[in-house]
Image 1 (cartoon, each protein chain N blue to C red):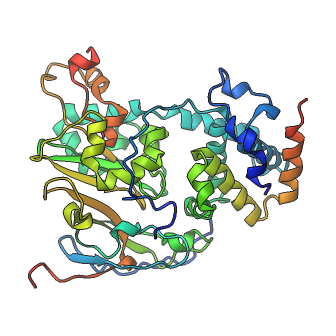
Image 2: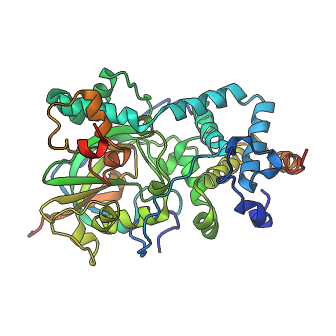
Image 3: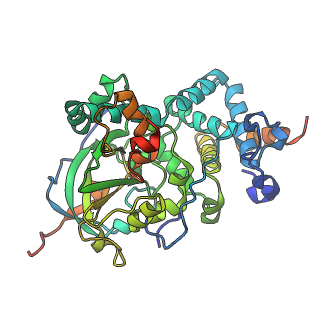
Amino acid sequence: MPQVHDRGGWPTEEPIDREEHILADWERRVDAMHNVLSEKGLRRTDEMRRAIESLPPEQYETMSYYERWTAALEILLLEKGVLTAGEIDARFAELERPE
Amino acid sequence: MTAMTATTDAPTEYQPGDRVRVRVDNPGGHFRTPAYIQGQTGQVAALCGVFANPESLAYGGPGQPRQPLYRVEFDQAQVWPEYRGPASDKILVDIYQHWLEPAASPGE
Amino acid sequence: MTNPSNHAENHQDDGHGHDHPGMLADAELSYYARRARAMESLLVEKEICTPGEIQAMVERIDARSPADGARVVARAWADPQYQARLLSTPEAALAELGYTLPETTPKLAVVENTAEVHHLVVCTLCSCYPRNLLGRPPDWYKSLAYRSRAVVDPRGVLREFGLDLPDSVAVRVLDSTADLRYLVLPRRPAGTEGLTEAELAELVTRDSMIGVTEARTPERAGV
């Protein structure tokens, strides 16, 4: 049984959905953060792939593309000790409160 | 990125035209050899270059020794028993050398 | 990491349908959008990077588009010697047009579609794509359906994109899993002898450079 990201040849007749969405600002910024951190030597493409592959399969299947990138960014920043879970949770909670 | 103090390259073992078989393996971490192509036999179409090993890079390692990367060509009809297309259809996959082993030529 | 399942109601609202996706107040953003916003704000606070660096990177990525690839293809159509260089030493050929790719991997490879052979590119493991030349990949390229089907049923996928190839044309699927990114050089459409390079570039679509379609005819493109 292949891992969830290893999709080649999985049995499906699902048509290709060719509708394209305009990227939200946060998606473009996640894309950019990965690239900026890469240039600073704080993140590698293969590390990011490995982080995405480590997501629980049911989450991998249902998350959008940049949601996976966001989850991978968090995994890598925690692992490298750049940020802590407590810091992210606290900042996240601040953002949850309407101004 | 980590400074590469000593770069070592695995010596190139295959040439275009060589028959190769993709090893069946699950090293238990990150790897770039799709499951559907494992165990299949194909022909080396090109040497793409020599690259740091992603199985090490993915965990912060140096990726040494670097691995030759080959574009390997497979017959679609052989890879997929249910394949709907002519015998001339091919699939080409880039595979690092340590995933390949020599295969006998057809008829040998 | 907060359990995302606690935020299912927010998860649904990813802001995609909003008129001004960049203008959402933080509290209106989805779970992951806020998670990203939180990390960005901390990275800036800790001086890991600056807002300017992130914004400059957004703009650098936004600036790349299929028009860059189309310009390269049009040059190759117009100049057979350039085409030969593009196929044999793509990075040097791109540099001739002012595109300098990063020193680091991935490397670019160019494959030529002909009357006998049609190439189609997929990345079954993730979303490898020649971003430096085509910009970000389209949603369908990253979809599980495309990644599953392109390798096992390429002719069926091509028919969905409107291209029904006869069996006399060999289909070659490239699964770009490693350190190379593939650009398809589509066939030059018939009846384009008198066109300028700029007009030729109008015929070169993003999808034709992924290999799911052919280039547009001058009639279709209105050139």
